[in-house]
Structures are given as structure tokens and as C-alpha cells.
Amino acid sequence: MAIGSPFDARAQELNVKRQWRVWAGRFSSSAYAPGIDIEYNAIRTAAALLDISPLHSYRVSGPDATRLVDRVITRDATRIARGQVVYTPWCDEDGRIVDDGTVARLDDDSFRWTAADPQLRWFLMHARGLDVTIEETSDSLAALALQGPLSRAVLEAASGADLAALGYFRRQALIIGDVPVDVSRTGYTGDLGYELWVAADRALALWDALTDAGRAYALRPAGIWALDVARIEAGLIMLDVDYHAATHASTPEQAYSPSELGLGRLVDLVKATPFTGRAALVRERDAGGPARRLVGLELDWEDLERLTARHGLTPALSPAAWRSQVPVFAAGRQIGRATSGTWSPVLKKLIALASVEAAYEPAGTPIQMEWTVEGVRDRIRGTVAPMPFYDPPHKRS
Image 1 (cartoon, rainbow, N blue to C red):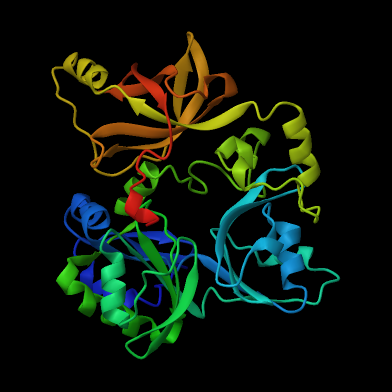
Image 2 (cartoon, one colour):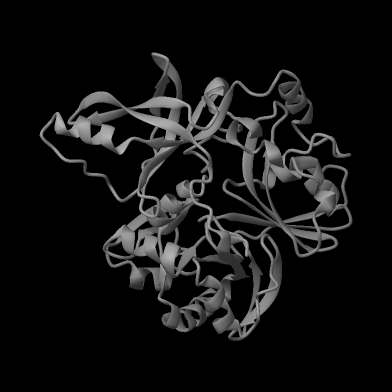
């Protein structure tokens, strides 16, 4: 049975369209405003507040905390500095991704670890023989993402702190009102943004303090639909949409290695610790890399107009992103599939994420993608595009 998040009392007041979805067992707003574009524009031009409490979170602590993290993730955990946050996948023995998330070093012997799927059993399996404590904090912690070009101004107004020195993928403790909050300069929108972690029983006080401070900066709540458009523009993958967890995959082709999802840069094959899946990933590298790769697609608008004109129609696109597998073709045959896509309001382009054969990875490669109009399947032209599609300088500055 789904339950509300710690911010549910505010969400129920603000969700005027009653647009809900279930995310990790919690009710989550698909949208608050009458139109998705209102919330999307807040992310891209002002500031938006998103409830990300359904993320699973864990506190890993003890003398062997770093050893445990290093056993599991593909990155070198010994190099994570105090106050640093890293994004990382972790794999099974076959080198296929189990999940991806963030690891934040809280102090010398403790970390906060987030994941899309429950991971307690996986972490405990890898903790055998180690002096380490793993605490599930998914219910005791609440989390908000404050995203957008004015998010720093909102956070500084709410806390009275100067955040100019808080670097990209770094974290620090703040007091907002009288609420202790752990803030990381991270997010899932491809824009300037922060994620705020707070004790669940102080969640509403944090929400109110941020919304009070945010009125001067056009802050508004945003739901999953607006977030989905933003994360595709940023070229960010989503579990159970762009890939399946190896532990849940029904067929081998549903499970992906990091390099198949554009995460090869996050795999350290020479670190001292032989993390789970390392041997398989070495074999993949030595064989020349994976046979399929994640790419961005830019689709031809004039081609779309041509298809719809055949039916006496003009193009009409949903403001929401789509999350369905669509065949991608080249050289007269299917060479992969698009997994999610959207109309990008900021770029004025139709874009998609796709998994294609390695030979078709280079930017500029012409492709076709299946498109259906009035129940008739056809194809529209497009090209492979560099990702991220949208990467504003202020995200890191």
C-alpha cells in the first residue's frame, strides 16, 4: 500500500489537479500546476522545489565503512573526500548495473548512500567480515531538491549563509530557520541545484521556510512530469525506463553494463579493491567495449510535419516526456531502440535517449525512429547528438 511522504500535507494542499503517481511505495505528485510547462519553466528560469523523499537512503558507518563502499561501487571510494558527493553505479558479478545513486562522505567513517531501488540486502551481503553498520534511513530522512538558476539565491535567503564556496558535488550542514539540514550541490535536472536532507519530523518546517524565502524568486513546487523533461535534456538515465536493474532483468538484453549506458567514465578498473563485477568489465574492455551504446537523438521536425500532414493534421506533442521503447533504424534495419524522449522547450527540439549498436554511436550519424500517427506506423529522420543536450555554465559556476 502506498503512503505519503513527509511533505504530503503540503503536497495535498498544492496538487490542484490531483495528479499522483506511486514512486517507491510513496505517493508523489506528477504535477501541481494546471500545465507542466509552468513547473518546467520554474526549473529552467527561476527555482523549483521537488520532493525526492521516495529515494532509498542508507547511512554506512564504522571503521570499515570505506572498505564496504569500495567493494560495491565502480569508483574509488578511498578518494571520496570529506564533504564530497559522487554519482556512481554498482554492478553484479557479470558487470551489469544493479543500481545507480550518490555516495556522500559525511565524515571519516560514515557515508550517506542513495539508491532508486531497495539495496539493504545487497549492501549487507557485501559487508560480511567487515566492522561496519548499515542503517536504513529511507523513513527517518526526508529530502527536497531545490533546482533552477535562482536556487542558490533561495537557499541563501532561507539560511542566511553564503553558498558561493559550495562547489559542484560538495555538501555542507546548514540551519534553515531552526531546522538542521544537510545540503549537497547535486540534482537530476541538469541545472544549478541542491538536494536537502532533513529529519522526517522536521520536513514541513523546512518546506515552509524555503517557500517563504522563495516567494521573492518565483519558487514553485514541481512534479515528476516536469522533472522527466529536464532530466532527458540533461541526458540522465532513469531506472526501469532507460535500463533495468540486473537483479530484476527478465532477459540478458534488459541488463546493462556501465559503458552501455554512458557511465564508463565512472568505472575505475585499476583501483586497489576488486569491486563486484570488475573481472567482467575488464573482459568487456579487452574485447573492444560493449556492442551497444547510449546516445542522444535529435529528430527532424519537418519530417514529423510531413508524416502528420499525410493525415490532414498538424503536429501535436504532449508536454510530458514519453517512456516507451521505440525502434531505431539505420541502413535499412533496426539498430536499437529509443527508451525515453520529449519535446525540449529550451532547445526547441524533439530529443530522445536511445541504445544503439556501437557503430552508430558517433555524433551526426543519420538514423530513423519509428513514429505512429493515427495508428499508422512510419519513421522520422534524425541524427545522433552529443549529450547532454542542455548543459548551462551556471550549473557548475
